[in-house]
Image (cartoon, rainbow over all chains, first blue to last red; front, side, top):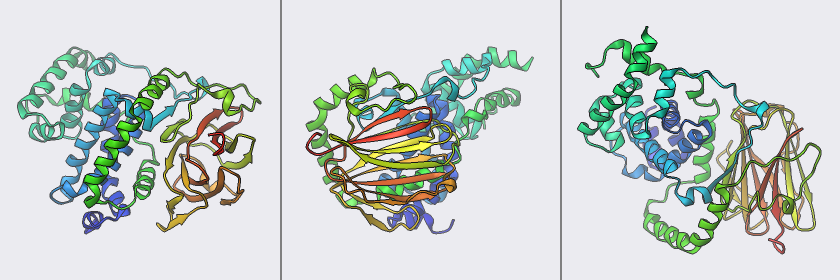
Length: 171
Length: 235
């Protein structure tokens, strides 16, 4: 993908879309982990893409820096959605029509999944970043905008919350 | 990484993020690309001015926005009996008039779409009809009737003073064989044009004579998305 980031920086939206394409999968999974709703996660990734486009001039480094930079924007967008500020309703009002016949098949939730869903957004995020994306504590802290110690602490707290169910699933 | 956690524990936690419902929809990249094109080129030098203008706009519409948000947040899903053709006034206040963006539907693969336009005393309407389930949709107002073609990247200027863009995602768009351009010349709906149709995403642009606000209704049996556009005198 040589030069696409530079083309994007020059103002080419298609080049920026190409730059973002490889990180949309981890970005969507992150948004799903945080928001637990496919529609909301999709909207969050789309809004984060627009926010990233507007903030591209402030992004430093090469393509290798795109993923952590974009994931940080996705986290912020998910936090904004969770806070439910009033203008998000005005600008992104949504009509949700899900007749029973159209609802996705409801999956059986394991105790582990239920325990995971009880975690706060701030505790689910480091779990995903550290265990699924294999990011270091330092990288996790940068994406979440917190100290490395706080990232480590949140990870431990989340794992301790899940541990009884993890041991149960392992049996 | 994470030497303090054993591999078994790591594997179990990873499994939480590998479910089918955690995977992104196939059309996400196409929708993001379309939205970036619609956003147009970045204007860094105008950033401060834009921020100030946005702040002024927020202050101006703040009171109205809060009132609308409070009303919208409690709004139940709209259900309409099969065969019934509602008017905007019947749907209000469940479906308030919007001048921003909205979306909904199901993230799934549906079937081909047909498009119809009509004019009524107080509003014009566009009806998208699907032979399968309602696909995911997104509706966004714009302050002009100028759009960007998804296929060519060229600017497309429609008749009208404002615009509305409808993005339908996850549909069997190659099955669409209807018109790609409609020029009804109604009072509100001046023109409708298909500006993108690839990778399961259809982008329709409307040129509007008026402020570009709208109401939406989602109807079943068959699945339809109806965009009501008030005529300037009634809006």
